[in-house]
Each structure stands twice: as structure tokens, then as C-alpha cells.
View (cartoon, rainbow, N blue to C red):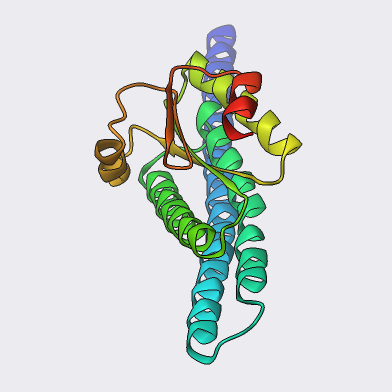
Length: 214
């Protein structure tokens, strides 16, 4: 009888410990998600502020004039690109490792895509007005897709070797960019649009990309 009571007690204690460990895991996971969401939100706010700063500067210069119009705006707009690339990589890494999901994550990523579209539009306008020697690339990818992952590495290598290249990446599965999908007739991933002129479907390697922007 004593052995049976001891066994029951041990089983009860094990259940309690297991429940506590499980609850602690959920709590830690939830806490980390909150920190990641805050981190991404802060970065998005910084990029949004930079975009507003650029637009305000452009409006001021358009109204009052400045001999260094192109130089000033190019400098301001180019400073946004590294932050956008870094944030995009963090979002992709979180999703690939399945450690950052849910509606709030999708909302943040959708907001990031909209900021990318705005930056791309501003860059194109400045490039045309000031005849800038910059290469603007739209990159459409699928998550958890081998060729998309490989293409991402190739594009990273291109950017690292040429600071005139700016990449704007978009996850095809997001409804908020459906107008881009329709406009550029995107039917597969990866797909690349270079300077609104050249379109590549399927993976494109570094040498061919360099030749296309030379």
C-alpha cells in the first residue's frame, strides 16, 4: 500500500513538473515573439520616418529650389536601402525558422512590402529625373523554395559587389502585392525585373546578372 501511494505521488509530481516546464516554454516563446515584433516594428518605424524625411525634403527643394537637388535626394534615398535589406533578411530568417508567425507578423511584413514599393517608386522617379547610374531590381520569391533561396544568395552577392544595385524583394503569397504580380505578369518564382526593362524567370546566376546591368 505504501509503495502504491509513493508511486501515485511520484506520478503526480511528474505531471506537475511537466506542466510547469510546458508552461514555461510557452511563456518564453511568447516573450520572444513579443521582442521580435517590437524589434521589427522599431525598424519599420525608422524606415517610415526616413521615407517621410525624403518626401518632405523633395517637396521643400521643389518649392524653394536647390542646386544640389539630385545629390541631396540621392544621398537620403540611398541611406534607406541598407536598412530595408537588413530588415527584409530578418523577416525572412524568422519565417524560414518558423519562429515568428501569426497575424501580427503578416501585418508587419505587409507594411514592409508597402514601404519597399514606395521606396522603389521614389528611386525610379529620382533616377529618371537626375539620370542616375543605379540598378533597381524587383525580386519575387516563394518561401521554403530551393530556387528562391539560391537566387537570394546570388542577389546578395551582387549587391555586396556593386553599391549601385538596389534589390526590392517580395513574397508572392502576400495578397497586398497582388497588383505588382498582375502588373509584371509574375507566374513563377524566382522572377527578377531589372530597371523595368529586363525580366528573368527562374534562377539567374551572378555572371548573367552582371552582364545584364553592365
